[in-house]
Length: 59
Image 1 (cartoon, rainbow, N blue to C red):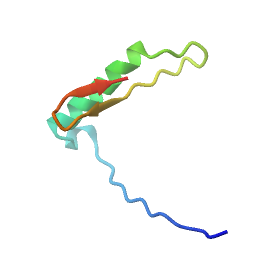
Image 2: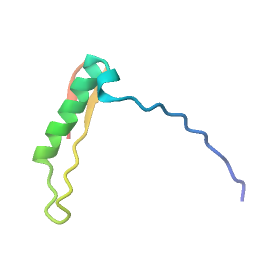
Image 3: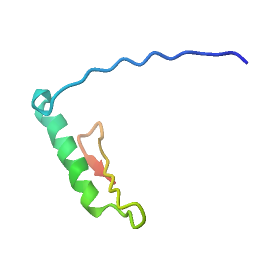
Image 4: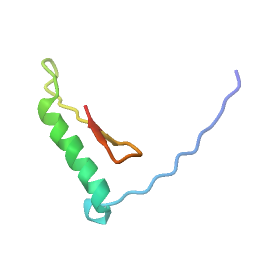
C-alpha cells in the first residue's frame, strides 16, 4: 500500500485580529447554534458560509 503525506499549515488568530467580515461570519455561525436540532447529545452546532456574492448561508 502506497503511503502519502499531507502537510497542513494553519495560523491561530484571536477574534480581535479578524476583519469585520470574518467576525460577522462567526457571529452568524454562533447564532445558528440556537436553532440546531440535537435532541440526544444536546451538543448544538452551527455553520455559516459566505458566498462570492457576499450572501451568507447558515445551517
